[in-house]
Length: 357
Image (cartoon, rainbow, N blue to C red; front, side, top):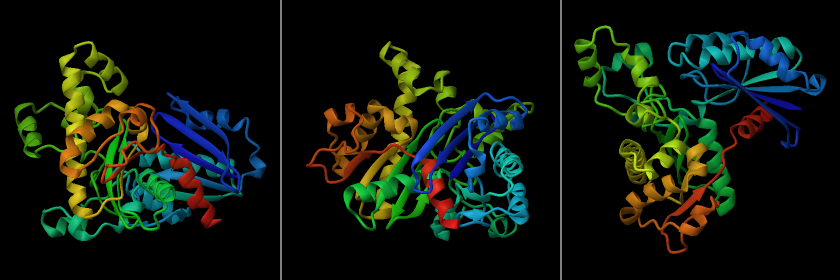
């Protein structure tokens, strides 16, 4: 059996797979207490722990250390710990989850699956920032990218469905956290998130791309303001419309709430801009893929994004199939296929971990 762990600061998501990658059990525990070990114990009560031979752990930030799934040892844990400052909300929780799971499953093979690993194929002209080069050499300030398991999974699934061996895709992972990836011949060549998950698209509570001078302005004008907290936790959809749940925003917009409607338009326009940029980066695009909680389930968001890019990229949405959340949602006449694919990061984790077993 293969067990996958996705441990966050306030939730634990666990799935159990057979060695044929069939999902057997799934658990999601949200709003956990400060005692992660008790939460793990509650989850494990219904597991046949003796049959678990491989444990796959999601780790958000692997820096430049890791380009693929990696067997966990003391050095790996030390490197994950050294990257906590780059992903303070995630790597610490990931590391704690590893330590607790190793206690519960001392004889299992523990494998780290890094969100950043899929993006290690990005070339330096795309991952470097126009800062003094020693900032990269000394502090490794560069674009890393995230949501790697999701982008990798849906691109592989699209290639299977379209019978394409080496596809070019633009994958849009849209949830509370959101990112877009340009995939050329099944490898990431650019992605919207950067040094941290703050860069890129407008998200549930993150601002995404802004003029850096705004930070200096706010710090000077409001010395006591926690700007970092505002940009990460009080901006995005929440900042504009006082709500980060897209379902609520759509309902409010239909009821005439102007700020909710404005937030939706901003969200979709920014997605469309990235799609356009990545179309140039790829040259040829086999499909644009929507995934994540919003991307998979919101016909309105897909419709609005496609309305912006439609004329320029010769994209034509099939309204009937889109309303049903079908997999292929473009018209036959569309020059680029539009797809909605349910992501499965845990299955991708299990697949990669099994190869290490």
